Image (cartoon, rainbow, N blue to C red; front, side, top):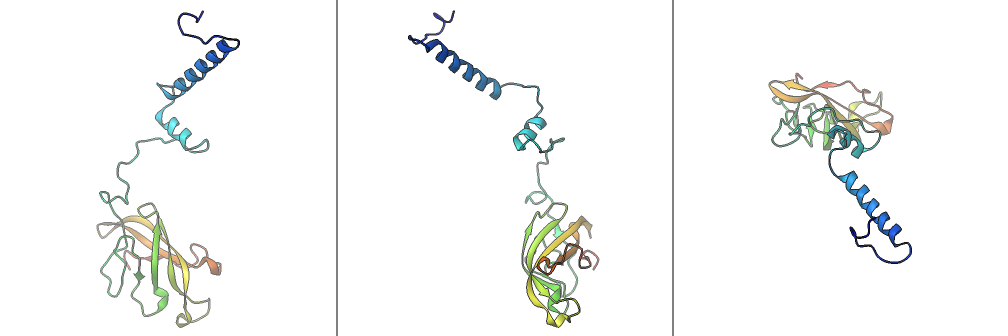
Length: 181
């Protein structure tokens, strides 16, 4: 039936080999072309993995951390003696106090522009009951949250940091209102 339409190699098993190749090619082409009844959201979720949620809306064209989009800052600038407050992705935060416990250095941020940003840095740690003057530089984790309007700018309005290596967890220290002071 296929002889004359498709040139087939001669010899035993050659028809089976040719048909196998044709079927594999047809399967490959069917899986890679044309509408399949799946939506783009289903294809995106399938590409992300079987447990990934399907996308349900248009994706934003500008992410908050993109240079062309809104770029959040940390709180409101203008308080005397502070540094890093009112800046985007500050690498140094100084709350303007006299002690080492209000300064975080070498800050590196992740997820800046999302609902909350997490960072790591070095801050003065004093054990519970010890005076602030006993603080020593320790690695710390920062969380900037409550993204919203602060004096007319998109800002993280709350900042906190904690020391996981000393058993602290998020919320172990009171959050700081860096919008109103």
